[in-house]
Image (tube, rainbow, N blue to C red; front, side, top):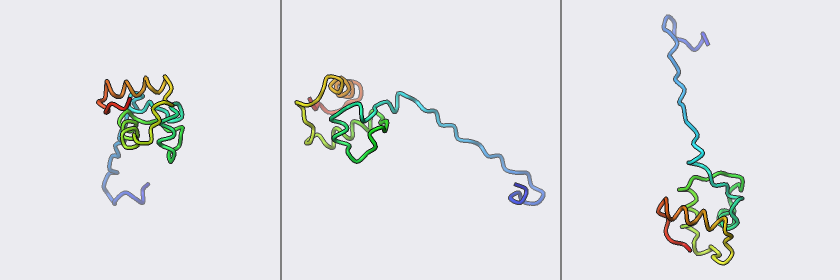
Length: 91
C-alpha cells in the first residue's frame, strides 16, 4: 500500500458504504409462485424480488396471466400487493 500513498501524505480514509439488507424489501421468491414464475421465465427462479419488482412483472405481463391457474398462495400475495402497495386490480 505504500506505493499508492503520495509521498509524505497520509493514506486517505476509505469509508465503507453500509447497505442494510431488509428482508421486507426482497421477500418474494419467484419459484414460490407459479404464475409469477411463468411471467418471469427469463429470470433465475430462486431470485428474491421486492414488492415493487413483483408488481412490475405482474402489471407488465397481465395479458399473459392465467387467472384460473392462480393458486391460493399466489392469490394472497397478489391481494397483499393490491392492498398494501397499490398494484392495479388483476383478480
